[in-house]
Length: 258
Image (tube, rainbow, N blue to C red):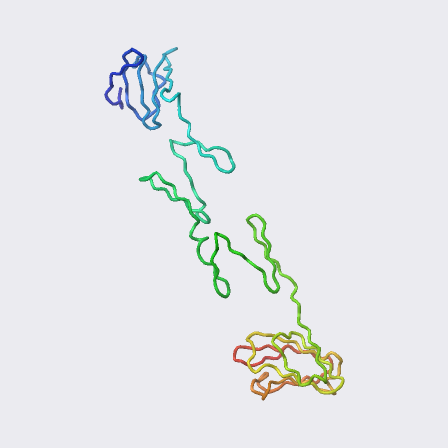
């Protein structure tokens, strides 16, 4: 009887029984050392057994108390019930979106949104914090977004170019930050384009001689008062028919022509 605690004398249905306390399932062989109705307590699984017979020298133990073995399971939204292994069921979050923290002292499992989800998301400019676990991703100029399941798709879209027709009658024309493509008709005379004195950094414009008259009627780009330079000069002249240039405002601020 190695590994057993001292036996206890019990009364079971009017008969004298010997009870042993052990941490494993009762043995099914070598049962000659136990007599019917020996009681065995599996303290690991918390299940009592009683030896009811020894046919063919093989112990016939049955659980008793509460009608038999208690089966404990956990069932999720899908996948069916999960049974304990060694009297334990692990409840585990993915550690990315869900954390599960166990406190054995209070027999409590705390399930919460993982810190990675709850914190701010930082973009090129500013930051965003989820509201009620949701972070909206919205497309802007040149991009659209769509969501399905756990997938977010970002697509590039064509960007509309603001087309501005400039004629000799409008000269001098004040160039706006909302202008993109300046299509110049200088067939009626020279045209001057006044670019902003305080340009927005990285703003790009395109200037085009649409009618092919720039060699005769030049197109001049400058700023009011000539306070900002174009490639080092206070103005830049388009004097080739059908010529087109790009004008980029840098952070100095000055204008670069290419």
